[in-house]
Length: 284
Image (cartoon, rainbow, N blue to C red; front, side, top):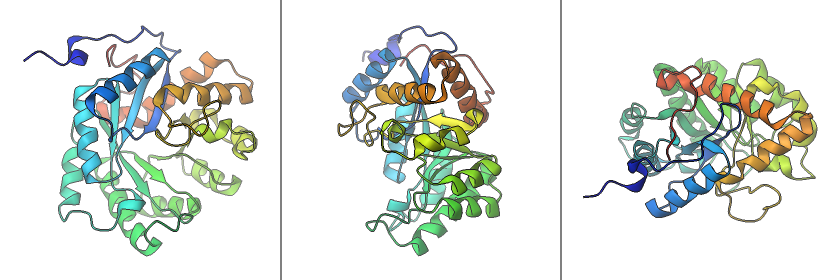
């Protein structure tokens, strides 16, 4: 059988150390292999060097692990999201533990709590699952990717009580007090396409985030940035998030790219025994 084209050394554009974007949070589990290949090619052509494929339950966690095995451009986060805490398989803890040892799996996530969406299970069910997964992250010395919409302070307090030392609060939309609490604990903030929306309060709070604690994301397939707002999002469009961050901060694009890459490896590199490599791969 012929090797998969991505395993035959299909090359992405050569990038200098400081001119790639990293999408720190995308949901790619529903893509078949052909669509995933096209998505990665599209991203590479937009100077995206790394994408974190993020799970929400045990089924997508297995998919993420398979994707990361196949595609060097990907890193993975596996976990059970607050939306999916009802009825996980009885073996979920052992399943996640095993997946967290797989190649290119760098974090446990997406996990967390959500106090804003009535479609989510009650917090009384969300919080115990979050606590168990945070304890797993702590025991394995891995970062956690946190969903905390409407419950940012509570999520920070839970992380602190369990002793989590590394966490990324993804798609942050909270206020200044929540932001300060996250930063004070040494955790990281990830901004999505919302930062490109003209009416977003995040634009005013951006300067409150130390650049060395910042990452960016698409949250694909959700929250497409301007000028594509309302469309199905894709990792290639993380550049619009990064470019807007650079514009709002009055910094050069390359300076922001370099710092974001350093931040990524500081947070996630330990899982691979890498503190700050150059580009981990030149293929998809």
